[in-house]
Image 1 (cartoon, rainbow, N blue to C red):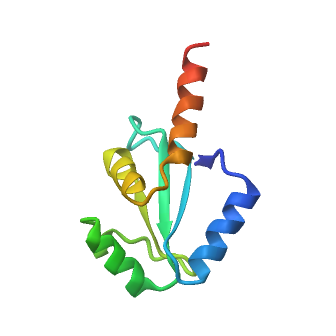
Image 2: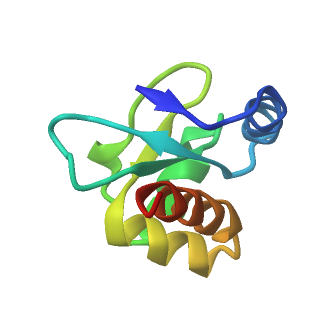
Image 3: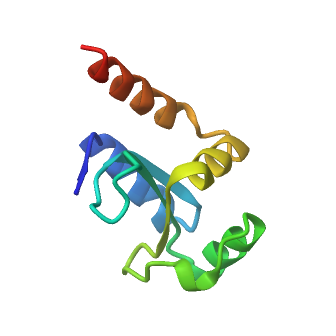
Length: 107
């Protein structure tokens, strides 16, 4: 289940990915298989070869790609999510979501 993403963010992610760029969509997330993680980042690109190459540069296996047309993507969670977003200069959304989570837990 995904939440915490605006229509504008989703549209921008789709536009960038459809243009053949690696695009990141970070949102709140819950999956009973991974209850320790509260966020996920979908790293997508409509050009699968570009996505595979990008993933290899970050130590991700091609077999981890979710082949969902028109946006194949990697799901990044946990420490991998943090490290890759920082390397890509895209950690601001993750930081904002984590701050929101932390402020809600202290209330």
